[in-house]
Length: 543
Image (tube, rainbow, N blue to C red; front, side, top):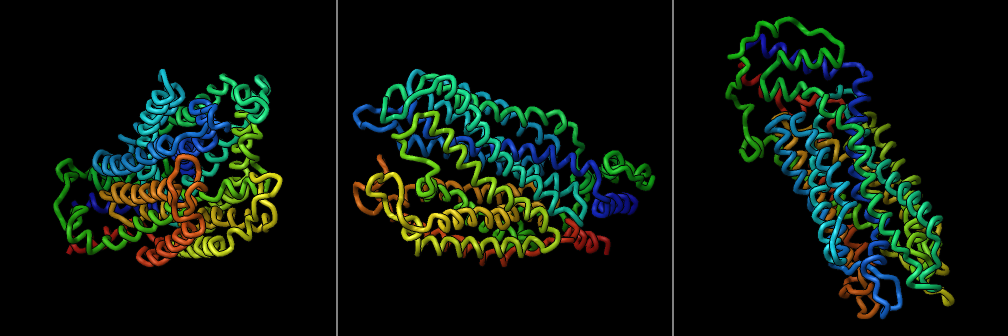
């Protein structure tokens, strides 16, 4: 038994001290491509939601382009988030129960087939098409959800102590490129179809402004999401199980050592050959406490609460950014009134606006975190991110209409006056500090704090809490932000509390995240076993 423990400690120590090498970067790409696909699939819907309304819900009596009814819009956008939440909980548990490697490929298979199926959504009516689309997008989200705890846990357990934060952060940062790619594919597809089937704006010819062939645009956009996932499937299933799972949970130090010898090009002691099968069986000890035990609550209860609440508050704010997106894009002239565009031109302009925001704020924020997370630490990055997000929201709350301006007398779809440069700068800064802040750190830290046998489960719980916040932010505030005055809200929506009060609530939400960060300890430059307390428990058992 002592020999087995010595070999196990040697393997884990070698992982912590290993030099950065090609296999680390290969793992980042393999795991990161899953997050690239995740972001592509979740954010591509925003570029074609208007197109779906024009294609399936046009009513000539309203004399304006068709839009998705509120309940349909909520379902089409929200069902993937619900699937993601369920997938995070299920695959988080499964990763600890059956091993990270055994279930890692399943998430990718789900994403591949659900992406293709989403593009093939069928039905004899608009309701039928939207129903099948929602069904497939739920399972797409289910696969996406599994990628959160599994990718974070695998990358964390593969990494060395010195650069673990950057490696895990780099996997998550691939989301930025996924968002950018979704916008780019929407731009390319809309440009190709617009060149082939050039149509007038809606106010020139309402019927001809939406060519029937535009139906292929959203279908192809969704189906393209299967390509990056399919490209990395072979490499994902070829990845060895993490040494920490094999040594600490499966109790097979011999296999852990051999797996790591192959990828890290190091030679461990031959002592593992002397470890008999009987010795590799699990030995009951204080280390075996469960998720719902008093021992877990004492050691990690407040940490799990801190991780879950911070991720919830972050996603409420992050997914509610579209509340004032339409005002900003209209104010700066990026997106004219829907009546002044054809269906394909609208897809092009929305994609272009999304790409610009991703380029100047979203992508840089992710990679600034990657560059600094192992230098200044996770805790400081998360704290300052919540602080500046709170500050930006308060500025928008109290100066929103002065920054935006008033509807122009000659064109009420545009805004005149105001300070549009400051308006878009503050909007971009909220994204930047979300990504150079809690959006990255809430993903990294839960993969570091908890014991190996509960690591994937706890990350899944934290991530699911975040997705619950995303559902509140994306849809609760979509209704809440509607005008307080009857008749001024968007078509089909009830009255709400107004945009300024909604922004005030979001500022308070960010402030709550700021204070709950104090429940989360700094994890920088510490081994996973030191952070989880597994070294401490092992020492207690030896004595």
